[in-house]
Image (cartoon, rainbow, N blue to C red; front, top):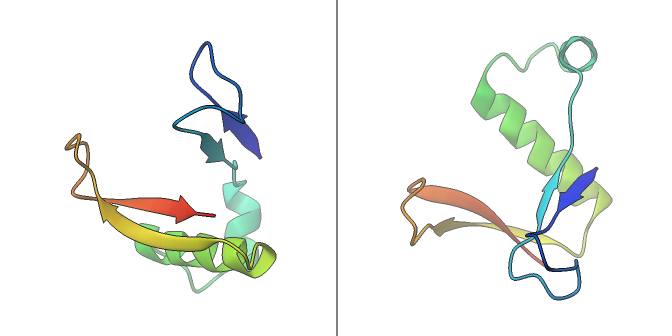
Length: 76
């Protein structure tokens, strides 16, 4: 998992923290043969994440910045 914070901040005091995990597509396709769409991939990824991090709540929230109508937010 990669974690990014804005320049000049640390994980503990940043307003925004971006966490990302790269998925190796060929392995994912073998392990999840029924997942053929981006929506299915996102659903699988969220489910897997929540199973490993039960204390985390994932919600959909409207972006005030307007980048996307619905962005996924993680509330810890």
